[in-house]
Amino acid sequence: MTIPAAALFPSGTTAIRRETYGGRVLTAAPHRVIHDTGDEIALACWPGIRSLVPTTWIDWLQTRDPAARDAALRAYAARQWELNHWTWRDTIWLSIVDRDAFFSVNLFFSPDHGGLDRWYVNFQRPYRRTPEGIDTFDLALDLVADPDLSRWTWKDEDEYDQSRRMGIITDAEHRGVQEARDEVVAMIEGRRGVFGADWPDWRADPSWPVPVLPAEMMAQPVASGA
Image (cartoon, helix red, strand yellow):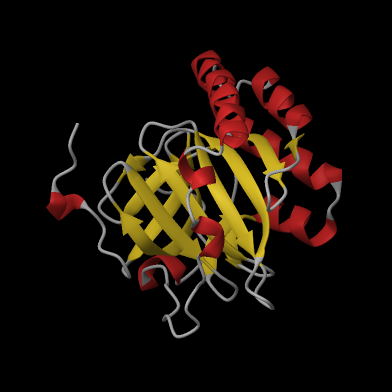
Protein backbone atom coordinates (compact mmCIF):
# COMPACT_ATOMS: atom_id res chain seq x y z
CA MET A 1 0.00 0.00 0.00
CA THR A 2 1.38 3.37 -1.02
CA ILE A 3 1.29 6.09 1.64
CA PRO A 4 -0.02 9.38 0.18
CA ALA A 5 2.62 12.10 0.19
CA ALA A 6 0.35 14.31 2.27
CA ALA A 7 0.38 11.67 5.04
CA LEU A 8 4.18 11.58 5.32
CA PHE A 9 5.89 13.47 8.12
CA PRO A 10 8.16 16.21 6.72
CA SER A 11 11.80 16.13 7.77
CA GLY A 12 12.44 18.38 10.76
CA THR A 13 8.94 18.13 12.18
CA THR A 14 7.90 16.44 15.40
CA ALA A 15 6.36 12.97 15.45
CA ILE A 16 5.03 11.38 18.65
CA ARG A 17 6.17 7.81 19.14
CA ARG A 18 3.77 6.02 21.47
CA GLU A 19 3.66 2.54 22.87
CA THR A 20 0.12 1.31 23.41
CA TYR A 21 -1.16 -1.85 25.04
CA GLY A 22 -4.67 -2.98 25.79
CA GLY A 23 -6.09 0.22 24.29
CA ARG A 24 -4.05 2.42 26.63
CA VAL A 25 -1.01 4.63 26.21
CA LEU A 26 2.11 3.09 27.74
CA THR A 27 4.68 5.67 26.62
CA ALA A 28 4.59 8.90 24.62
CA ALA A 29 7.76 10.63 23.43
CA PRO A 30 8.35 13.41 20.87
CA HIS A 31 10.97 12.77 18.20
CA ARG A 32 12.44 14.78 15.34
CA VAL A 33 11.65 13.31 11.94
CA ILE A 34 14.86 12.71 9.99
CA HIS A 35 13.05 11.27 7.00
CA ASP A 36 9.85 9.48 6.13
CA THR A 37 9.57 7.63 2.83
CA GLY A 38 6.37 5.78 3.67
CA ASP A 39 8.30 2.52 3.72
CA GLU A 40 10.96 3.70 6.19
CA ILE A 41 10.74 6.31 8.92
CA ALA A 42 13.77 7.60 10.86
CA LEU A 43 13.30 9.45 14.15
CA ALA A 44 15.78 11.11 16.50
CA CYS A 45 15.70 11.76 20.25
CA TRP A 46 18.40 13.32 22.41
CA PRO A 47 19.10 14.34 26.03
CA GLY A 48 16.65 16.90 27.39
CA ILE A 49 13.56 15.64 25.54
CA ARG A 50 10.67 15.07 27.95
CA SER A 51 8.26 12.18 27.62
CA LEU A 52 5.65 10.18 29.51
CA VAL A 53 6.51 6.68 30.74
CA PRO A 54 5.17 4.24 33.36
CA THR A 55 6.16 5.00 36.93
CA THR A 56 7.37 1.40 37.32
CA TRP A 57 9.80 1.94 34.44
CA ILE A 58 11.11 5.11 36.11
CA ASP A 59 11.61 3.12 39.31
CA TRP A 60 13.66 0.55 37.43
CA LEU A 61 15.79 3.15 35.65
CA GLN A 62 16.58 4.85 38.94
CA THR A 63 17.24 1.70 41.00
CA ARG A 64 18.01 -1.11 38.50
CA ASP A 65 16.09 -3.29 40.94
CA PRO A 66 14.82 -6.45 39.17
CA ALA A 67 11.71 -6.26 41.35
CA ALA A 68 10.80 -2.95 39.68
CA ARG A 69 11.10 -4.52 36.24
CA ASP A 70 8.93 -7.42 37.34
CA ALA A 71 6.38 -4.95 38.71
CA ALA A 72 6.26 -3.28 35.30
CA LEU A 73 5.42 -6.57 33.59
CA ARG A 74 2.74 -7.36 36.12
CA ALA A 75 1.23 -3.92 35.59
CA TYR A 76 1.13 -4.50 31.82
CA ALA A 77 -0.53 -7.88 32.25
CA ALA A 78 -3.15 -6.35 34.57
CA ARG A 79 -3.54 -3.34 32.26
CA GLN A 80 -3.04 -1.04 35.24
CA TRP A 81 -0.28 1.55 35.28
CA GLU A 82 0.30 5.24 35.80
CA LEU A 83 2.42 7.57 33.69
CA ASN A 84 4.78 10.28 34.78
CA HIS A 85 7.30 12.59 33.17
CA TRP A 86 10.74 11.36 32.18
CA THR A 87 13.59 13.27 30.53
CA TRP A 88 15.75 11.37 28.05
CA ARG A 89 19.43 11.36 29.01
CA ASP A 90 22.88 9.87 28.31
CA THR A 91 22.60 9.12 24.56
CA ILE A 92 21.51 10.50 21.20
CA TRP A 93 19.05 7.96 19.84
CA LEU A 94 18.31 7.39 16.15
CA SER A 95 15.51 4.90 15.39
CA ILE A 96 14.86 3.52 11.91
CA VAL A 97 11.73 1.48 11.29
CA ASP A 98 10.50 -0.27 8.15
CA ARG A 99 6.80 -0.57 7.55
CA ASP A 100 5.36 -3.94 8.64
CA ALA A 101 8.61 -4.93 10.41
CA PHE A 102 8.57 -6.59 13.84
CA PHE A 103 11.68 -4.64 14.81
CA SER A 104 13.34 -1.26 14.71
CA VAL A 105 17.06 -0.66 14.21
CA ASN A 106 18.39 1.87 16.69
CA LEU A 107 21.74 3.60 16.84
CA PHE A 108 22.92 5.16 20.09
CA PHE A 109 25.49 7.94 19.79
CA SER A 110 27.61 9.60 22.48
CA PRO A 111 26.57 13.21 23.24
CA ASP A 112 30.23 13.91 24.11
CA HIS A 113 32.05 12.85 20.94
CA GLY A 114 29.10 12.18 18.62
CA GLY A 115 30.35 8.76 17.59
CA LEU A 116 28.32 5.57 17.47
CA ASP A 117 28.32 3.65 20.76
CA ARG A 118 26.20 0.65 19.73
CA TRP A 119 23.53 -0.74 17.49
CA TYR A 120 20.36 -1.82 19.27
CA VAL A 121 17.63 -3.84 17.59
CA ASN A 122 14.32 -3.54 19.40
CA PHE A 123 11.70 -6.17 18.61
CA GLN A 124 8.26 -4.57 18.59
CA ARG A 125 4.85 -4.63 17.02
CA PRO A 126 4.76 -3.25 13.47
CA TYR A 127 3.98 0.42 13.83
CA ARG A 128 0.66 2.02 13.04
CA ARG A 129 0.55 5.58 11.72
CA THR A 130 -1.44 8.20 13.60
CA PRO A 131 -2.02 11.87 12.79
CA GLU A 132 0.66 12.73 15.37
CA GLY A 133 3.23 10.01 14.71
CA ILE A 134 3.42 6.23 15.14
CA ASP A 135 2.12 3.69 17.66
CA THR A 136 3.89 0.43 18.50
CA PHE A 137 4.59 -1.85 21.49
CA ASP A 138 7.91 -3.14 22.79
CA LEU A 139 8.03 -6.95 22.67
CA ALA A 140 10.85 -7.19 25.26
CA LEU A 141 13.50 -8.95 23.17
CA ASP A 142 16.55 -6.98 21.99
CA LEU A 143 19.82 -7.49 20.14
CA VAL A 144 22.86 -5.34 20.92
CA ALA A 145 25.75 -5.07 18.45
CA ASP A 146 29.18 -3.44 18.44
CA PRO A 147 29.58 -0.33 16.25
CA ASP A 148 31.46 -2.33 13.61
CA LEU A 149 28.91 -5.18 13.80
CA SER A 150 31.68 -7.66 14.57
CA ARG A 151 29.82 -9.02 17.62
CA TRP A 152 26.26 -9.08 18.83
CA THR A 153 24.37 -10.50 21.80
CA TRP A 154 20.74 -11.19 22.60
CA LYS A 155 19.23 -9.24 25.49
CA ASP A 156 16.19 -9.77 27.76
CA GLU A 157 15.32 -13.24 26.51
CA ASP A 158 14.15 -14.11 30.04
CA GLU A 159 11.83 -11.10 30.08
CA TYR A 160 10.52 -12.10 26.67
CA ASP A 161 9.74 -15.61 27.91
CA GLN A 162 8.06 -14.19 31.01
CA SER A 163 5.97 -11.84 28.88
CA ARG A 164 4.82 -14.80 26.83
CA ARG A 165 3.85 -16.77 29.93
CA MET A 166 1.89 -13.79 31.24
CA GLY A 167 -0.01 -13.40 27.96
CA ILE A 168 1.48 -9.99 27.18
CA ILE A 169 3.00 -11.30 23.95
CA THR A 170 0.58 -13.28 21.80
CA ASP A 171 1.33 -16.42 19.80
CA ALA A 172 1.00 -14.42 16.56
CA GLU A 173 3.47 -11.83 17.82
CA HIS A 174 5.84 -14.61 18.88
CA ARG A 175 5.80 -16.01 15.35
CA GLY A 176 6.52 -12.54 13.99
CA VAL A 177 9.44 -12.09 16.37
CA GLN A 178 10.92 -15.50 15.52
CA GLU A 179 10.90 -14.67 11.82
CA ALA A 180 12.31 -11.22 12.55
CA ARG A 181 15.19 -12.70 14.58
CA ASP A 182 16.39 -14.66 11.56
CA GLU A 183 15.92 -11.64 9.30
CA VAL A 184 17.94 -9.34 11.56
CA VAL A 185 20.85 -11.78 11.88
CA ALA A 186 20.95 -12.24 8.10
CA MET A 187 20.93 -8.47 7.61
CA ILE A 188 23.83 -8.02 10.03
CA GLU A 189 25.90 -10.84 8.56
CA GLY A 190 25.29 -9.57 5.03
CA ARG A 191 25.57 -5.88 5.99
CA ARG A 192 22.25 -5.36 4.27
CA GLY A 193 19.53 -2.73 4.65
CA VAL A 194 20.09 -0.29 7.47
CA PHE A 195 23.26 -2.15 8.48
CA GLY A 196 24.82 -1.49 5.09
CA ALA A 197 23.85 2.17 4.89
CA ASP A 198 25.82 5.19 6.13
CA TRP A 199 23.74 5.77 9.28
CA PRO A 200 26.80 5.44 11.58
CA ASP A 201 28.04 8.69 10.02
CA TRP A 202 24.81 10.50 10.88
CA ARG A 203 25.07 13.29 13.43
CA ALA A 204 22.45 15.31 15.30
CA ASP A 205 22.60 19.07 14.74
CA PRO A 206 22.97 20.85 18.11
CA SER A 207 20.99 23.80 16.73
CA TRP A 208 17.83 21.72 16.31
CA PRO A 209 14.95 22.84 18.52
CA VAL A 210 13.90 20.33 21.16
CA PRO A 211 10.71 18.47 20.12
CA VAL A 212 7.97 18.54 22.75
CA LEU A 213 4.77 16.71 23.50
CA PRO A 214 1.53 18.69 23.13
CA ALA A 215 0.97 20.94 26.13
CA GLU A 216 -2.27 19.24 27.12
CA MET A 217 -0.47 15.89 27.28
CA MET A 218 2.41 17.21 29.40
CA ALA A 219 0.22 19.27 31.74
CA GLN A 220 -0.03 16.48 34.28
CA PRO A 221 0.66 12.78 34.67
CA VAL A 222 -2.01 10.61 33.09
CA ALA A 223 -3.26 7.15 33.89
CA SER A 224 -4.69 6.17 30.53
CA GLY A 225 -5.20 7.22 26.97
CA ALA A 226 -6.52 6.22 23.57
